[in-house]
Length: 281
Image 1: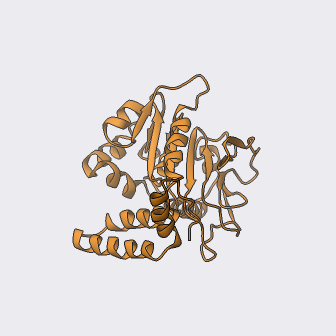
Image 2: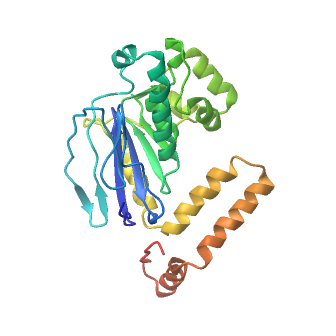
């Protein structure tokens, strides 16, 4: 798989939930996304940008957006809003496990992307849709959006990481309350409990959260690619351990930036009072 160039954006849409990935970090030759297999409702598209689809998906590439020379956005349209319950009814118990396992694997891949990811929720993000959003670094939503882990209504539990990522996002007690009740929150309620970072009034085009996600991603794009990658790594790994171990992780990640060409470019650009030209090296 070819490495993605720094300074680009990619987007994934599942129903009215989109994932925006700011490609501030170059994907090295030893790092690849799962491009050779398909799960129901989730398909990896060509290149590094993931895209939603189904076993026989209806897909269409949107026009490339060129609001800035260095900014490129491509996404796939997908009408499904989450798991197809009619499809689930047809599955026997031996099929459900592998299905959920593949879904969990894809969500984990998204969580481990070495670039900043932002979930933009403009409509429904229920069950697996919210689990996808929880795997992202940042979540933004329209005030009219609806989100929740509603699996207990179907006598199951969240199986795509929801029982683990929701408590880490909003705390154990609130997460238990939401999962036990299968409660659905709107954007304002989600912001109040800390589930999302920004809430916007929906616009006429129905993409207010998506536009906010793009604005945030544009703030990330100029930064040093290696620094962005290891900063995400330091935060993610550090949050799972005690403070002393976390500080050791930070030290190791910082060391990865010291010998890079980008660090020298950043210092030179500062001296010359110009914008740096980072290459992810």
